[in-house]
Image 1 (cartoon, rainbow, N blue to C red):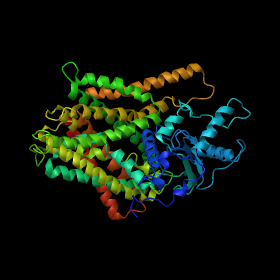
Image 2 (image 1 turned 120 degrees about the horizontal axis):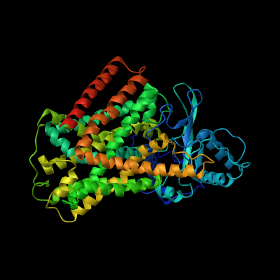
Image 3 (image 1 turned 45 degrees about the vertical axis):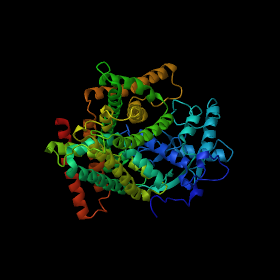
Length: 588
């Protein structure tokens, strides 16, 4: 059975009659069984939430999504508002007994963790949270609450409508897994099917780095550029399978940081946090550059410079950072749609223009080889950038109904990504040749000869991408800063003055992160150079070097001598290439 034909037979595991059914739950063509439109949407929501929480500020924490210590059993954390396991959720050992007691008609007493394969519905969770709110005023009837409990800024009821629009999961199930020490632990069962995981993985991989690929092909030439792009795809796909095997050594590991801690302790977790922070910063800068460059190409002049448009980006993007996370998920859908439409429009523009530059009917002169050795390494860095999705792959695997199928989904994911990347690289290179510089859309907007409606349409679509992606991209940094400064918790009985101080600090944090993006965008205004640095340094480390090291450490008793030798060789070669590519990108 292929990865696409996933679990259509076990729909009854999660759908039991008598519960609320939404329109998107109804069968529609190929969208049926566990692959309804609603389930696709809820799977996408979970993937975005995982990405928003990929930074873990607690370096001593063994598992990012668990509470507990080295001596006590791990207890998974679950956010009842968003119906997903998250680092700042509630303990399952507290939440599940309350739900069981609610089902039995009581709301006090003691109960153990739920039985295997039991399903809890969002309606039950909503009722439980409403009862908590009503009884909180009476100490005698109050629900046992941890001494330090998370209170999200918006209440459950205030974001209820937003959650329904975002189509979060309507239920969650439980399963038992065994960690590498032999402890049996109850965790939330995955819900995503293979097609849903493929969609989420492709969404992670296909981003703004796509727009710089024609520059990478220009730097590398036809003879070396295309093979380099294919080699980057195959290598990162292979390293993702190593990451998957390393995850199989302990079923409680859910994040990239968990793998780092299990392999090399808190030092590795610190390194991963720093790498992720730099990666997020670079992506934030590239999005600001994309926004300002597209507007400047359309209406810029001596007064309205690129720097001024970057300040406009700060004013426009910052308010989105204050929106609740479920609402931001809705905007991210528009970002995906805009990216797809931009790719299609670039291709169409090539056929709408009869003469070079910017035409596929009259292509520009191109080069077969790199012009110099540094340009070869610059090309490698740019061509590596679109394949940096490994930071979220552990979450996506553990969110699957059948995690053992994750490796099969990687083949489909990387095939789709490679075809898309090759198409954009080849089309952009043929259309503009040696004129390729920064993002291909910026050159297109500066080229005369297209129908008048093309320019505002492409510029508008490009502006949608930063609007949709920047707030979500900033979210992990913001959440980490909130955690470091103790702004993510509101303790019961806190004074109004202290709460006001925390609210002010949260406001400053969000403004600061956006100002950081814009500040670096002003200092480093070259889009292709930012993408090249991310690919040459961050992607090499996160997507090749560290997965290989995790595999060598965690699977050392299962690896044969020859395999160990070539994995080590890959680490050595990748380290050298990362250093050379980073130096070439910065120096030239």
